[in-house]
Image (cartoon, rainbow over all chains, first blue to last red):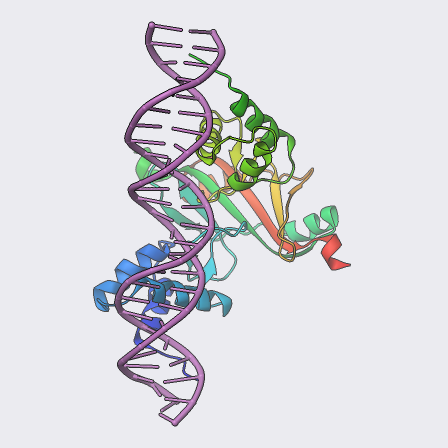
Length: 125
Length: 125
DNA sequence: CTACCTGCAAACTTTTTGCAGCCCA
DNA sequence: TGGGCTGCAAAAAGTTTGCAGGTAG
């Protein structure tokens, strides 16, 4: 049972290191700079694998989204409607929502996510 | 300047009426039952148009999602991880978050959305 | 050796677009 | 009658998969 390959390692490191919530395509072109003959298929395969191992998380609670986040801890996102960038909202977690919604809906809740939309300070200038 | 067409009207009504947060494909097959020769292109064109007019909203704050919601007022969603259905969370809005996050990030905030993941009561049985 | 992993390319799925004709204000 | 709207089909974009060969353990 093999664990490592140069390609896999690069992908993990890249996704964990970057703050930009990359798409598969972005990861591909980025890794390609170091490993020029990597294939897109490999990137998808690895992202999926890493995701299933919980080393990397998909953004969004609805689930058809293909942008990833190396930070798998609970935190929220904010998207700038002007320039499209996605950032983390640091230091703010809403407490008690899961219990409240569980009581309200009867669901057994696993997780929640929160997203904001607006205009970032740079674009406001 | 024309406003109505049979197809458009059917699409609006369908999306506004349904609670199931439909995908474009679902809308297509559903409308097809009444208007058999409607084309998928028309469905996409209309959903996009309605969305830009604010008559219908896309689910998710990250934006690559293609499921729609006829209820454009602020409300949250919950997805069942077992059966995949998406429901509305009724009667619960978190207050003050937008101001808080605005202060925290410097963004001018337009909206926020909240999603939950869990197992629905039916699947828990 | 033998899994597992990779690159490549083809297959799929989902969404967008160009075009010619149709239809309503 | 004109401009928007439609159906159709091709194109584009995004994701998955089969295969043959390579490589770490």
